[in-house]
Image 1 (cartoon, helix red, strand yellow):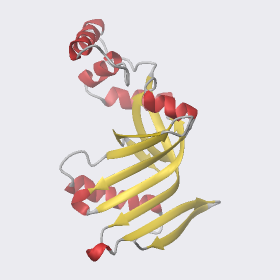
Image 2 (cartoon, one colour):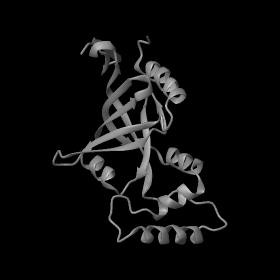
Image 3 (cartoon, helix red, strand yellow):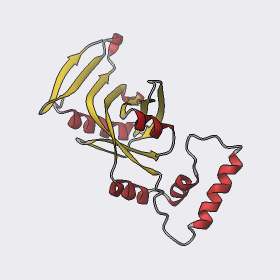
Length: 192
């Protein structure tokens, strides 16, 4: 096994991309508001490396409010087909505008229009209201590229801790815990 958590993550992620039927890049994102009340939801990993793990979202929704008040988060990947999990904890920063622009441009046109139409985390009277907004965005941007909304962009979780969990027979699981220290990573092998 790799001694570097990012090398190990790359190997596990490559296996997950081959074995998971849907959304091998799905991860649970846990945040907490200013009062410490937690919230968790699924998001999609859209970039990763030694500088962190990146996802994109509306920056006016509950996730964004939590992260503005408390810029720390936890991520969890669960790859059931491999019987593996990866837990990540760390500080959160905004992805650059260039990164956010590049990723937004790679999305399907309808996904781009949906970002403009969405009032993330805010209730609507009915589904028809959202569909009407979507149609209005289609008309607004007809015949032109859809720019990234100013309220939409990426976040990067820079890990302090990365834990790899492997299911074993008789619940004798194996965990490898990597903790970021000055100049690198310290590893500890843990068992149930």
